[in-house]
Every structure is written in C-alpha cells, then in structure tokens.
Image 1 (cartoon, helix red, strand yellow):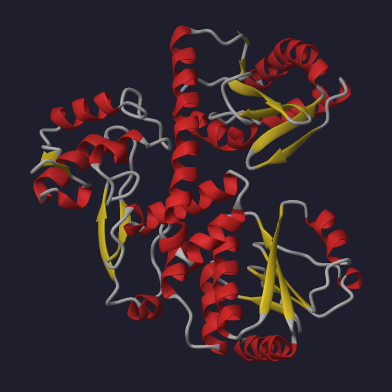
Image 2: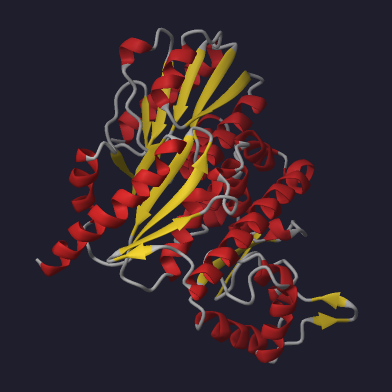
Length: 418
C-alpha cells in the first residue's frame, strides 16, 4: 500500500513539474477546502499557475471541466468517483476512499492531513497548522504532526465555546451550537451568567478571555457550561496569533462560515494568508452567527408559546422571514439537538427555487415510513444529512402541509402502535 501511494505521489510530482497550470476541483466542505489550500500553497512554492472551483454537484462540474484550459485537473473530496472516460486530460483524485490506482491518492485520514503529507513528500515547506485544523473537533492528531508544531502550539482542554481568545461575552454571546437561551445573542445575559458563576469578566479596563481566567474561574465556568450541554474539548492555541484565530477551533468554524456563506475562495485565502484575510473572514462569521442566533431565538420562543401547528406526531415550523436558505441545514440540526419532544418536525424554508422542506426527529421512529405515503401523494423526497428533504414549488406548500398533518400523523401513530 505504501509503495503504491509513494508511486502515485511520484507520478503527481512529475505531472506537476510538466504542467503549466493546474485546476483544483474541490468539494464544498471545510476539510476539502483546507486540503486545497495546502496544495495551492505547494503550487505557489513550485511556481505553478493554479485555479480553484468548488462543487456540490460533481456531474455538473464535470461538464464544465471539458472547456477548462488547465493542463492538469486535481479533484479533492471525501468520497469521489470520477468516470475516467469523461476526463480527456491528466487528472488526480485526493480522497478518503481506500481504492488506489494510478491517479488516486488515497489516505486513511482527514483530507488536510493527506494534503500535508503529499505536499511534504514533494516539497518540505508545507504548513502543519493547516493540517492540524482537521483535528480540532475530534482531537488525537498524529504525534509526527505535533512534533512539527511543538514550538508553535499550546495544547490545553476545557469546557468552552467559541474562541478561547475572545472576550468572554463574545465567546458566550456568539454560541449557537448548542443554543444557550438567555445567553446566546445577549450581552447582558452573558454578563449575568458570568456574575452568577462568580467570574470577574473585566480587569484593568479590558475584558477577559477564557485564557485570562484563573484555574478556579475556568473550572466554575466549565461547570456552568456543562450544565447547559457544552462538552469538554481539546484547545489548540497558536502562539504566534493574537486574534480570535489563536484558537484553531474558531479558525475552523470561520472556514465553515465562509463556505456556508457561499465564499469558499475566502476560506482558502484565510488559510493561505491569515493576516491579510482574517478581518474579512471574521466579518462573514459574525454576520452568519448573528443571523443564526436570531433565528434560533425566534424558534425557541415559538416552542415556548406553542405557536407552531401540530397534529398527532407531526409538528410544522413555517420559517418564512426567519431563516435564510443557506443556513437551513445548520438551523435544523441545532434545533433538533435541544428539541425534547417526540414529534416528527417539518421545517418549511422558502428557497430560490420555491420551498425547501427539511424533516427530522430526535426519537427512534423510522421517518422512512413517511416516504411511500407522501410519494403516492406526488411528493418525492430524498435523505440528506440525516434529514428527509423535499423541494416544492411555492404554490404547493399549503397542500403539502395539509397532507403531512393528516396523512403523516396517521402513519406515524400507527408506526408507534406497531
């Protein structure tokens, strides 16, 4: 396996030397984008012209590639199957898939680490901080990577949200996942919570961050956050950075925000030139987080007041005017984490094409039982990110909601009885 991988890297290195231009075709997710940044950095170092395109629909992208003038194509994504007959020029694939042949570079690890290993095999000047970003959520980076970063990274742990380098009221106030009622989106609520925890949040006229707190204060804050559903995490602090990006977890979240906002190119720029692009990227993050928290506050109040229509085991949440389409999946995922009822929830989200319906549940009822009945009524759904998804024309929304409340409630009641 290693020899095959070594040979594939050697082949790519040779193609890179021969190519006057390379096109990176990148899946729209944080890992793939960070990997693309590492390989873009390699191109800069090797004086190879490059461009990037980003995809969610690979089939459509393959049609566009036929017209692209680049001499070499490089696909990056978690699970990619490329029909060779459709690519009429040299190409490579960086993926997590285990299959390995002459143009597939397959590593059993996160994509940023794969790209880092590849770049180091070709040129020793790869940026290890970008590879480490792949481990900020799951932890356990390889020892070799930590050795490369031993003088630049401080590793600690804690039960906290946001960036350990942010002022405490911002760290708490911009917390959306999980949503903290009375704290998220409310500076006064943050200060009240900190006073309740017995934590002094200001010193010498400057607001404190998590890293400024004593061990006792960190412990008290951790206990308070743990009661609100926050889990302990490893904290990787970049010693040379003095902004919120000092905490690599927050850097990763900022990359995700740029992608969600439809600007993955900014995410790549943030990886390559953080000093130049961090202000613009942080503005994107804050705008998205404010919008998301406002939507979550509205939904939380709607649950509290019982304003959403329901019948049997079905709950409908019409979100018109409250959630933008590009935040729909994040919004639904967060809501389902703190929704404690046993109902099946349908989120109705206006979209560019009409209406996007996302259906999910927190209980063990098999929502696949909805598919045949709704299909027979003319509604074709698909499963995506653990949700049942429908795309409708706007004028069909009222009848769809009526169908779900009547037909869906009956089916799911029968499912529970069985």
